[in-house]
Image (cartoon, one colour):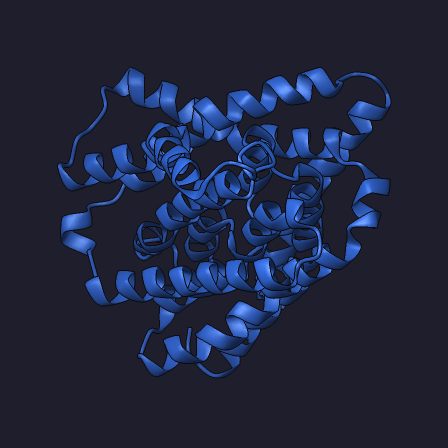
Length: 316
């Protein structure tokens, strides 16, 4: 029951903020122009600040577990490549590929991972290691996939598209924030107090502002028209990946905080960052927002279920 209530407390407010964004749009308090500006602000400023602080706040040298980070890295890589290949083979509308693939593998690892582990154990020492193993790959491959599957680059040759993707990776603000955070963690660089507070304030508003924007731009009719890819991506994000890779994690001996972090990585709802990146990189942002709404709504049941099973088996 505790896991269920905590899962509700973690996911339902997120869903309510999206509903609030939709309501504010309907009464005319915010509009599409506000949403467009907010998306760019979150993408270029707020999310990089949030990810920087999440990674800079841990001591990689003391806490680094190569075996654990390697598991998170390989599972994330295998998931991304497999889903991408299957999407290219079976998805009838190729313009959906980038958003569909993102929605199928990208978790709210940085946000929910730390919150869940702190709630259960009081500390979140393993969450940054999971973030190191998965979040950089999430963002690097999202840039690659959205670039290669973009409508604007679809008709250019492969070499030009790959060059465009590499430039996109180097210039992507989220990826820059991640690697600056890793550097700050490795070299134990501490920001001056006033600068740290400023960056922290910007990072804090990333998720609420992104969620309000998702709600404001959510198009119910368009989302219903894409219900099938939404359902498939949501099932992959919330159920399929965990069903495949959690038994492997247990077999490898991961328990406690490490296993909870893996559950978050595999089975938490799709991150709002997927919508922000899809909208800023010419992807199908309607499908991206639909997947985020669906996975957020249903994750209170599925995520609770995975944690309940782990507790029942005395693994956490």
